[in-house]
Image (cartoon, rainbow, N blue to C red; front, side):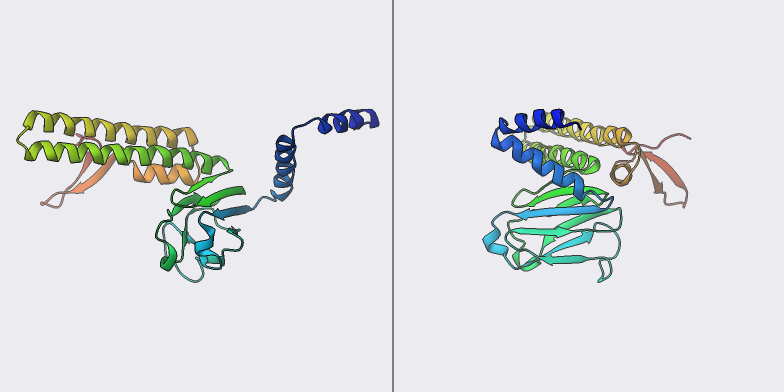
Length: 229
C-alpha cells in the first residue's frame, strides 16, 4: 500500500461510525485467530447463576468419556473450547445448573464459532454452523406447530368431531413431510460434511424392516409402505 493510499484509508476511518469501526476491528482480529483449527467462543445468559460453574463439550454420538468430553469454568459469563475432532457436539452446563438453559448442538469444524447458551441457545460463524442454526430455527417452529396440530386432532377426536380430527391429522402429516423434505434439501445443498451426514442419517428416504418370516424389505420412510424392488 502506498503512503498516499494509506493516508486515504486513514482519513476514511476517522469518519466511520464507532460501531462500524469496532466491527471492522473485531473482524480483523477474528481473521488473525483463524489458524485452521476449531475455536468455540461462548457467552452464557443469566451469567450470575452459573459463574464459576462448569460447562461441557460432549460428542453428540459415541462414548462420553474422560478422553472425549471437555469442560471449562464459566468466567465473566464466557467460555472457550478448541476441539480437535470434526464431529457434532453438545454444549451444556453442569446438570445441577442446567435448568432454564437450552443444550446447543454445534459442528466442530475449522474456524471461529460463536455460541450463546441461554433459555434459547444459538451458534454461528462457520458455514455448517450457520446452516445448523437455520435448521434449528425451522425444527423448533415445526415441533411447536406439529405438536399443536396433533393435540388439536386428539381433542377433536375425543369430542366426537371425527371429520375435524382427520383434517387436523392430515395437516400435521403434510407439515411433517414438508419438514423432512426441507432437511433433505439442506443436506443435498451441503453436498458433504458433518452436518450433511447428520441430516442424511436422520432423514432417509427409505429404511429396512424385518418381517416375521425373517425376510427384510425396503420401506418408504414417508409413507411407511413397502417399496417393490
